[in-house]
Image 1 (tube, helix red, strand yellow):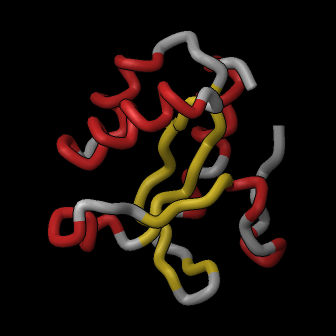
Image 2 (cartoon, rainbow, N blue to C red; image 1 turned 60 degrees about the vertical axis):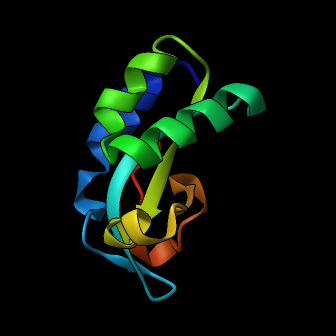
Length: 98
């Protein structure tokens, strides 16, 4: 989806923060590029900064998905993050779609 649509979807779903999906707490909603090469660069930057807004400067205007980051506090220790497109979260979480 385009960047502006994704920002709107991200805003509409802030109620998901702190909720759990399959036992994992949703810590942050970030925008991740759909392009694999750009996504890899973005994820590396996100892991360093642990701040989706700052990392998003790298991808401004790109085609993106909104991704729920799980258990963000574990990223610093492992160097990896778990996440999923918010449109794939459990229906019980009542994701606001477009």
